[in-house]
Length: 238
Image 1 (spheres, rainbow, N blue to C red):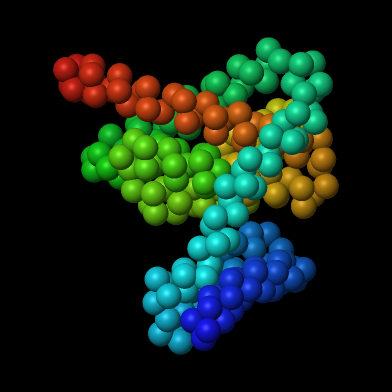
Image 2 (image 1 turned 45 degrees about the horizontal axis):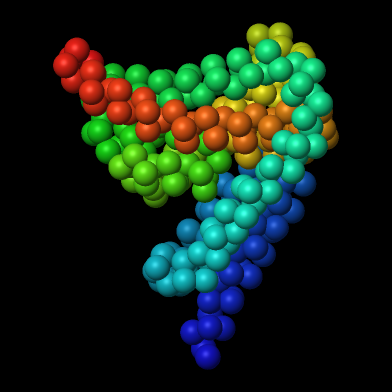
């Protein structure tokens, strides 16, 4: 009975800490910091101070992770809802999806080769621009380390959420479709959330579609690219 109560406490406590982190973004000095960073820091401190192991904490918090699956499936709704935008700009958008997927995969592979990264770690980095539940499954399928992949996904999302629009502004990109596609394709849900906070709803619509399509393409293309690499890359000395 007590064990069940503790699990519920961890579950509810995680939500409470996250909403507390969202509340803190009202303050100017924390406004640009994504709530997930603040919430993660509070949870880590909480576990360390009370000497609670991650395994014990995760016995209750794992149900939040489980909810990522249904949340990802729910992304099909905005995909259907915004199909008119897709049809109207299909050539540019579909090419953008494909290009973004290849850049995300090959940039991770290129950097991994430059820094002589272990192959298992390199595999873990490939789905870094995909939303967490799909990225973790891709990593598990191709022989990566799912936990490391989750960290890479969060780090990528944070970078996109903080700097994505600034980089696009620096290059003079003002088109709503271009901004939404770029942010969603590169920094998944976290980047999309940053657009939602600015109430750029057209950008959010495209960004949501982008993160969904890029996730699907990454899931399909990554195993194929790895098979081709293993077949021809070693022989060519790549």
